[in-house]
Length: 640
Image 1 (cartoon, rainbow, N blue to C red):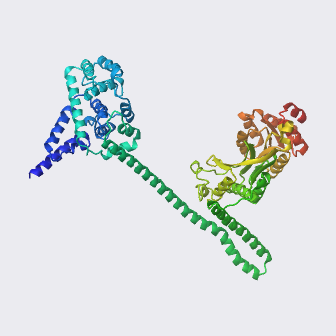
Image 2: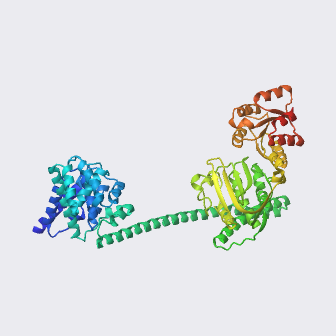
């Protein structure tokens, strides 16, 4: 019965402790064999500490600062927990909290002694304080009070001076309450020293694991005496941090494995789909060929044979890509290194996708006339494979009648080859993973295309085997993608019309031309002629496209048809006249109409000149030569 009553008293005490602190500190779980002692200790804590009329936050911060000098670190750890919100500061649930930065700064400075103490003594003497008013937390005035109280606690040779300074700052009654609080702090310190079995609670362990700077201040404070418990707690906290880090690593690894497993499943499903695509027509074709042979239908047999040959080539290409990735992954890929002409590589790559581009009616731009020769060291077959994959990728995700451009430049002993399209583009979140094996960015399904996620990974690995790199940029959505391949260049030579020896001619060729005509065939042929003359050209087939491309390109000269649907040449020219980029652009009407009133109308619309189709090569060459030299007067005289 007596034991039951004692247990009830103990539970009642712990309930009261928890109601004040918000937690039950281990400090009050001791001496279970002597409940009267714990009860009296709790009574003293309420009188001298919790119910002490000084502001709660001031009392708690003072408790923390003076606990720096206790060699057992439990006391300071628990009261820092109260300040940081792991319980109630001074048992007051309505009290404000102190930030971690303020706590760290409170513990950062050593205790001023001797002459260093004098400014703080003067600071305390000048203050007029009371139990209801305390200095602002983190202020010099607050720190001066804490310094004096610490000297009294430690009974240093400066204790009398500190006590005299506090007597000037506080009334006698207020000072007595401050000294009562100090007496309880001393009792708490002694209590922790005689109970080395005190353990830091789990909430504090978590706090110090997360706040490593704070933990460093507590457990490596030169003001505290070294003790076994302090070292033990340091080891425990270090082990806890390592355990936390290990758990994070395990979590990250598990997530990576889960993602890899998902990608593997997606890859296998996609592989099955990709294999069925060519296998289905091959299987069906064999059956159809049996019938065609029986009927001696040679035309059908040849058509079926041709179809199955193409599907077999697709299947072979698919398997080859997989085998190449496997070889690279196992480090058994060998390259036949030689000096390779890059222009030839690009031309071969273009040929490999030419039929696809033609079928999709893609506008293709490639100015190979800038460089007569660019030589790199590499495996020609693999280099063609790199650029074929990138061009095939551009063709696959560029809409019908879209635009694909290949450009080359040399910079810092490297050649930069860019392949840019105006297709659907790549979402920003997928840029980082686009070159990973079996990566599916999500834009494949959106564009109606899907692949194994092998091509770009193979491109990246092959380029790296050539000591190069590849990057991607994209303006998503529907603004296209740009892949840039960088390779070390062995030697290069500018084309004769772009060489340093032919500076005048090189200047002439630096002319950006824009063709605008809804007659695609006529535009493409004229564009080809301009390319053959050594100039870069962009071709569009509507007024709307012309406005968009011109704003981005800022061309030197525009040749534009008049009779176009939706937005005719006159309307387009009027809109161009208002554009900022139009300042130095020559706008020439190229039309089948040549009457006087037609010339007047184009002039009113904003055209600089009016030419009647067809334009001959010599006339075109002279116009572009004047424009490239920025010879406006010469052009005007030539066309007048």
